[in-house]
Length: 367
Image (cartoon, rainbow, N blue to C red; front, side, top):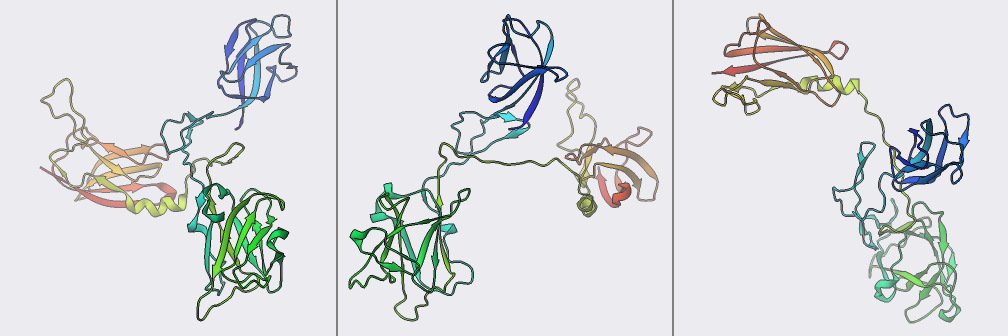
């Protein structure tokens, strides 16, 4: 959201429409046009945030027919259920939001050992006891140490020691160590070893279980993790109430260095021009008339001069191209500066873009 300034003419006991709806009412303020005096909601005016309407309350400080200044933030999209990249979200401030929801699942594309880890242990991660309701929307790090770093959280499972810790590291949240339950394979020795299951708890010791993991060691040539090695557990997560996303935009700009490099891309379309061009407009008043001939120069910089010559160097046409930065085309009707149609043959063009440089090319016109 951004703050907008909106001038309005007050009407006593009549609603007038502001420029935007879906207003954040906590951000709304109303003042005189110079900003010297502010007015109070419920006493001087009534605001309907959803529809973006406001009325002057009789007996308040607002005067009928006087211009006031409203300042507020508004939501460009509200209560949208379009979460599958649909096109139908409204455009606001020249932007359109596309949203793609996710299902809660392991994100195996992001699950891996930390860079440089020598281990060849094979990780296995799943919901506790393969129960789908045990999946939890979070990311984790299993951090390994040379010495004992944690133990099983619940006494009824025994205090099994482990040389790792589990930390929840979901983006946007403060990293927090999670307790685990360790389920040993026989023979039990109160020390986690590859193959023993570790179950992640969300919260304190009485919280519900979520994901479980283990690591399988190679029968021969197994390499254990070093102290400092990390295994990353990641999930894809659906949108939930309270999620907040922030993005910024940057204004359009001209990159002169890139523009110089792209001068070599300037071309004539079509080339060669053979009798006609599918882009040429029809003459609606004379359907049998083919209409004016036309080609265009493509990939032009924002400002430049195009000069067209015969193969012998005679100047045929000068075109001045001045456009917005996202329009690199200049059309030409195949006539000379004296407004005569050109004849068939080979032509040269020279594009002068001043400080950016120049470009030279050729094109053909065929009967």
